Length: 515
Image (cartoon, rainbow, N blue to C red; front, side, top):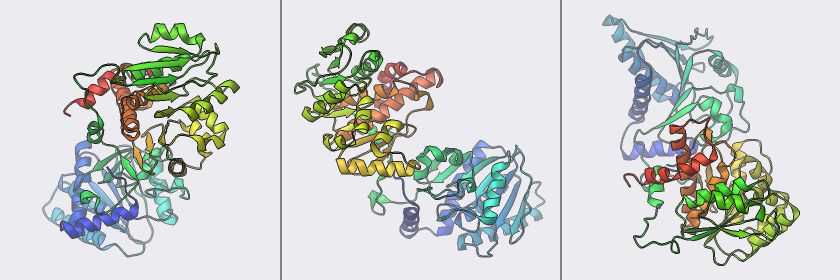
């Protein structure tokens, strides 16, 4: 699924109007009906509806929704802000339709009605109660500057009220992409956002969660066949696409044909990182796994992961010496290795000599962050899987998630590497500068060791000869899906990294279902 800019959203609207063909007013009617039906399904007709409509097309949507909800016997109060006395053409049409509909309702003696107020100067705000549903239709994707003046005051008034808020397409005041210079307390704080046809980039950033709330994309058939109209670097990964990446296993498969992976992990006191990464790798279909670790971890690893072969480092307590990896099909390095001086030197030697596909994680990323010049020595097409702190070691701290994403894209393109920004909607950034947001996963996965599990999954897929692009996107999706299945059976609060490993078989099974 594409994630389009505000300018591109207008392009696809215009394309649909021209090629379907359909009038802009009827396209607005289609969008409004989709939102109105969602409201009807979720809130019963005893819910008082307070609709705030702006002068543009988002306000036109809101007016159409008011008419529809009233027709379904909701009590609707409408406040149309027309302080400049200049409505958009479609907003003007829906204003007149609402007035005409209101007149018909009154003459049929309906027990329900619409109260419609058009604000051209002073606004006396209505009382907003906890049982009210506010529909925010003040401004949509066409907004290009922060709200101020009277509209900012209206936003603050709504945000201070106890009512539930639904936003149409995008919360009023929120820019679709970059909010670096926005005035954040002049943005509607929606409980639910029903967005039309495409998700907006800003929805994927943590600092915007308080404004967007729960969001859902509503498909209204806006056309963009075969990517003819728009090109974008931003996408939301969908299940069918990930399913198509899965390779069938040959009936004649054996451990030698399913890949030999090597995991460099663990120092004294950090055997758990090696165990989690190893178990995840073995649960993800690899034929054979070798774990390079110091002798202090040997006994616990052989007891915890008997399926793995051990390659013992010469130092009893840490990874201290690089070794030949020509016999391996893929390598991962970093979980729990620490940043001791011997380890730092061994790391740079190891990645310089390794020729196989590679995952770099955890302490290996901390080493790179402390030796920025070494970024240039990273192998092309290798995969980095940082959490936020590790990422800042690579790109420096940023003002917000948008700047963070853009700097990460620049680094990925410059060094021709893959970078996974871990978190909600984990973002896979490719050497081409594309970004694939991942839809699986939940807050219960915010627990120590979860990243080690992801490293093991991606390592296994690389060893099975999945191309890096498929390995990283499939790995991130399966990691989140296993976490979701575990949270469904257990709970988010009780989830630990081992649970993600244990649910990996169910994740593979679920992904293969109906494939």
